Length: 445
Image (cartoon, rainbow, N blue to C red; front, top):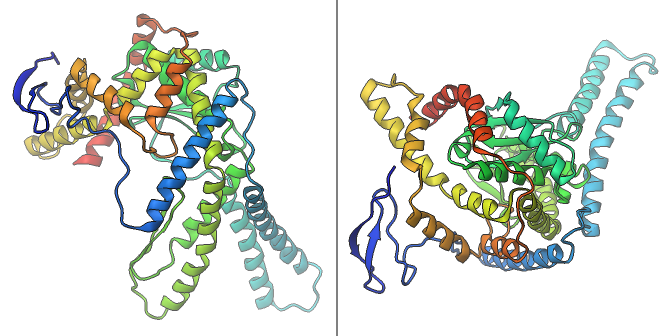
């Protein structure tokens, strides 16, 4: 798409003439009108206000931690209460498993037991063991969305080069999905983490920005975040599994939310349809408050350490890909909403034009044509918006603080991807485009 700008209106705040690019938001360079930085949603709930104040304090503490330990990748310490909660969580799992073994063992040392009692004890013992195995994350991964394991030799080589430059083990595998993200996924605590790269994001990146995407994911896989470790992270995953179990319980049509800063866990309760079983459902739902409270406490007590690990991950990634490439990657990742809107519009057009049988592989092609190259004016708006952001995004610190820390410690790239190698990676991933386009078509139509 060629950049074509034209005056369309005047700024409602300062009266300046606005020059915009068709298809992108109008904004004012003079006064900053409509730059649209990420902001926390306003709420009259006093607990939300308290959470916002706590988050700011945690983020400030995290920034100090990161600045004091720029070259110390060791795990951050966590409060005693977090370790106690993790201990109780793991102890409960172990107790269920041992209890199941004892019930089963008792069947072979108990005389005079009838067939009915034997069957009941057998089912109960097996049930305890299955429950204990099911709620622990060591062997049983949580459900993952549809994904494609990358067979790109060029991408695998790049991941190895990045991991080597960071002096960390290479990830277990690389998966490609339909997302617009670059992150690490720990499916269990036995194998090494998995790097997950969004196919849509990779289509819009320059060679060095591709290095940055891989670097930020690998940095997360080796971070000092206690939530990624088997002790605290394992307890969090176990509590999430308990929430999955108790989430089937019924408390009217309420939504029970656990405020854990930005890391909010929401369990949606189904409608009452069985008046006979409603009492049991409510009892189970009230018991489910316990893992919710424990999860909230773990998130709260590890908040600063998690934030600090994000800062350290940024600095480690920048030393591999270069500060400029990483900041540009953050800007491109802000195109997620624009890319989603383009894909949705194209899906509806194809669906209407061919009654749902349009050639779905053109979806991503249309997105590339719409967003490449991105107009310089839109990049300026995104850059200014990021530098105004003082709100959290998921578990990440405020973007303006992340950029300030990166620019205070600039770095040149130690891993460079040339245009030929970049083109090879895209060509090797090209066979996935039809399947991902069809997946997006089914999702948006």
